[in-house]
Amino acid sequence: SYVSSRCPGYEPKLESIIRNSKCCKARLLHYFPTDDDNATEDDATNENDDTKFSNWCGWHNDHGSLTGLLPALYLDPGGNIVNCPDTTAGLYCKSRNGKTVHARIPEDAIAFQVGETMQIHSGGLLEATPHAVRGCKG
Image (cartoon, rainbow, N blue to C red; front, side, top):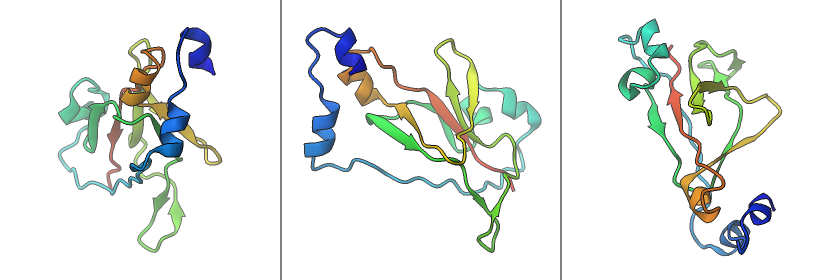
């Protein structure tokens, strides 16, 4: 594995933890639209201020090993799939050079981000992904 090839003496732990652990290994999240009428266009660019940048989930790292991510899905009140009504909504990640990236996962894909547990298990070789979520207005 990638980590084993770069960390002499590393013993693979993740597969064993997932296979043998009796603890919860996944959770499903859904973000509902916000009624945030106080948001302004300036808020969308103020990425270092949690209270202004993210109206759902401020900048953080996940505590688990891996987080599986599916593409965003927007529904109208009748349950029909519609285009995203707010182009600033969604997942934002910090790149390794500190830039903010609006993560857009293709419709036919699944993505993964590394959490703090994986960072610890890899001896810091893999780093947790700092990210935030902006809720959809409207």
